[in-house]
Amino acid sequence: MKDIQDLDLNLLKLLKAVVETRNTHAAADKLGISQTSVSRGLAKLRETFGDQLFIRKAHGVEPSELAEKLAEAADEMFTPITKVVESYRNFDPSAFTGCVTIAMHIYFLELYGERIFDALRQHLPKAKFNLVYWQENSLAQVLSGEIDYLLHFSGYPLPQEIYQHRLKEVTMGIIARKQHPVLSQGSNWDLIKELPITRIMVDGINTKRAPIEDIYLKKGHQANIVLATHSVRVLINKLKNSDAILYGSSFVADTDDDLAFYPLPPVEAAYRHIHFCGGYLQSKRGFPLNQLLHEVVQGYFTDLIEPD
Image (tube, rainbow, N blue to C red; front, top):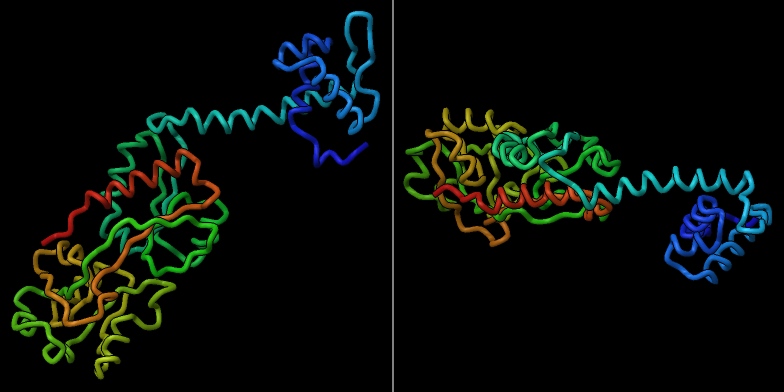
């Protein structure tokens, strides 16, 4: 027998048709091919599996036990393939009852998680959801298919196996309490250089040092970091009850009536905006569920208007 790794799957469909019809002419009609094509296909099957596949009879052929078992195996093989293809063609979000897992940095989970969930459940009303924060093993779970979609900052390094797309460009500023004694006068470097700073920690990007610290060093100042945390709520508590500041977006200021959004001091263009990105496995780019997740999340951020 020849190595079956190189076997054309169409030959198994041919074998199955001949086993079922017990006639090469009938098999040709069933498959919509010529008798010559059937004969050539049977010859290739004999090269792979040996001569004992069919015994010629007066009005057709008699399949051997090997041929019948191969036809049965082919049926078992094609059935799950057919189901996969049908799931692509006939995906109905309103009837989907599977589980959707989305991992995002806790910043996204706290600021946008509830509204993203509302948008998702409108499209997938019967689905089960796992909305989890990004952890050390999350990347491995994306690569293994356990996580269907991810939300992160654009600077987070991801391998080529993950398809990424930009969701939103957000304007950066300074967040602090309303009527801040310093920022109410202005936000040039001479005024703000001594102010205490809070920062959100983004694992894999700024766990040890934030970009704002590099900016301060370039200006000849030392950034006075008094709080670094993963939690937006902890940041807000500190900002409301002190003169500390946060370099972030107006979305954070919009979470609490006691906070205000102040303009940045003069900085390079690269620091004036931040980008949010979504992603999923490249191998799932044609899968309807992942396409839907992309469309829903992208639509949410497209419609999201930055607070004044």
